[in-house]
Image (cartoon, rainbow, N blue to C red):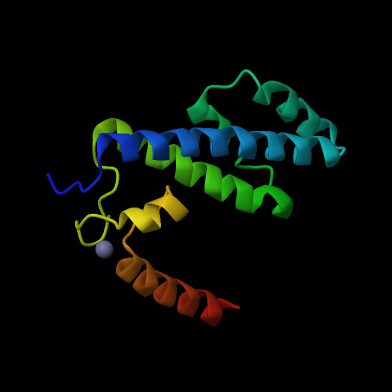
Length: 132
Ligand SMILES: [Zn+2]
């Protein structure tokens, strides 16, 4: 295994992510309510009862800029928790090396090590810049 995480570290990261998940869901729910649209109010109502996986899917079509960032983070956390479950958490998606624990403490849902993330963002932002 390439994993560099102790069980205790993994547990506390998992706890942090779950807490953040709840917080983000609530923020999104509040934003839906504030939008004052009947459709969004219905979604906000059903949010409470939803399973983790269906939550982000349901909000896909909302298109409220205000909650887009929260939603992105929530999806990243959902995905990270799945990686914890299947044992691939904490390993860089791009280079297969362990992600630094300090980085995970700051960004538990990180998909890439800091080097690969830097490369990714450079590429990503260049692409975005061209289309703008
Ligand atoms: Zn990497």
